Image (cartoon, rainbow, N blue to C red; front, side, top):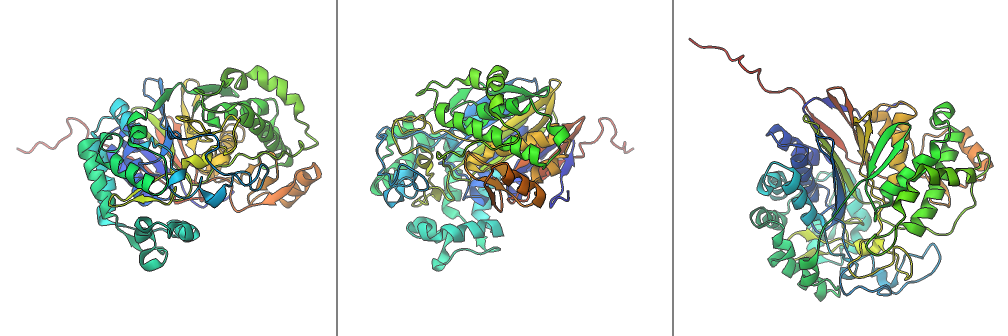
Length: 545
């Protein structure tokens, strides 16, 4: 297999994000003596500038940290439903697909009524304060610089702007940056965000209170309500992050550390790996009909359980221990028929694939895997006037129909598919992996884990290898699968749908003795940046006499 990108290799630190300037921001922190957490938070703030369609301070996400002493620290900074939200707040169009998730006037997707109470700024600041070594003002400097001085739009960014331009044009504050003179930006255009630079400078001085208890939040709430939204200043003041214990599983002797509910990315990922552990994937080989069939069948079972059980544990009883147990996989595994595909289902979970993921590691052994989002491209498309701050549309992640695990309730967090995963071998870090891509996230992360553990792939090959995906309907296949394999899968009952990509830009860091190997795939603007070299040997200075 020929890869499109090349890995980066270093010994002192590694940053992998989906934009080169995002990775450089983190590397700048490490070069200045910071740790993996300093690097991750600097990168996230930088990405709000250079990857604005994916992530923002008025967004949501989760962060998985493995500290140098081997202990885990997890923080869920996902968005919540406003206090005025109700299970029937949106006017749905259909109880069946393909219009199941759609609402009248796209009110759960575009505009102020789609905005959830944000957790990104609170979570990033809390993570930095708890596990970083630099100040908030320090880690904000690259982002401020990129916003104030500008950067050149990539073809990827320009392509996404062009795709959502009609919706974006409804909101003048957003359009003036990305649709100057009424036309979408093009690759190579300079993007300067002066208002946002000033917002970041004030955050550097005042901290997250500027949003949650101060003038920025007041301005945001006022603008949201003027456009028909329901977020209030009280919603912002009452927001709290959700610390949790990582989900722990094992796969062929390797320990898996993933996010807890309301993300499905830990529990269901472990469940699917447990199902597959009973089969000889290494013997079947990568990309074979047997391997792809088994992966697809594990996904189908996993998505059935995601629909039934996964939600905000403050609102629904999630049987986490049972779902992630080996015993449960032993019960469900006989349902997998190697010769025939499982019957297709009608239910589909709906999320936007537009998110970002990063991973960082330092020479001391600290590791960060963080997945963050504003949900759809450019979120709700709403920018608060005079601030440069884009608002999320995370309410779109809820099921707009009442009575389900992921239905809307005041203060509730949406079910997510995020999967910032860390894998250990013999008690030591082995690799970390993650990606954007909505419901394709945890199945794609699972395939990367299999690529490394079962098939012995290098990090670069593991993240770039062709992916498969289904949640119970058609079997999506990227290019790269043999024609004979696709024919055999069809013979077994799979409805094959060839797609350009499954999921988004995956990042991985692997730990090989004292070497860090970073890899990004072709599906986004991902760049690994490594820190090598080091300071002068103590006592080696030339003695001038």
